Length: 277
Image (tube, rainbow, N blue to C red; front, side, top):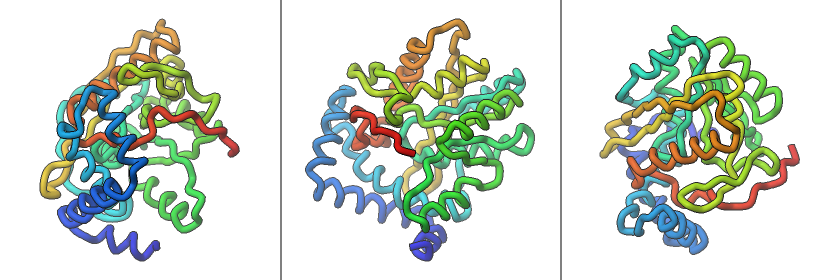
């Protein structure tokens, strides 16, 4: 399997996206459970299947592009509104980059690190170690590319994120990921309560860091990506619950910008698991 990953990492992006789109539709056709969840989640957000059907192929593109993002030469990524990041770094309180499961979220941190890590330090991201030994080894190598520091989803990892923010550096999170039981609260997401992580909100309220919402969209025909950046103003005196709600609303707004590339098949409304780690 590692050899296959490295083979895929060397393939051109247009081919990976073509293969991924085909696989996305194959999985959609063969899995009734996935298909129902995809349609239900899109409907919850106000979209018909016809409006977001392209997201079926984009889910497959996400899987097939990962070896290239993790192990290969990084594709071209244009950047829109990068000045908000420059301004946030200048304030010296660090940055919390937030991105939903939309487009190539793995590319978001790589593109940001390529642009700013030399001047402002590594971007720290959380990851859950894979259970398969071969995949764990690949992930450890891939997510610690130049300018990126991956830390485990443990108390020690969270402490490293806080330390990075206090030093004026940046961290990155996917706040629409369902956390383990006890690490989140129920908060509205597209009008329905979803178990939502509190970590992003706690980091912001505890450190006063700037919040940057990042959205990395795929261009057509494997021509690369475009990273859109927007600052989210979070009052320091705001409650934890209100901040979590505000972050969820910001993720909704980002998804509305490009619903055709969101992972509608993700189990956003599932019950949290018990963390046995």
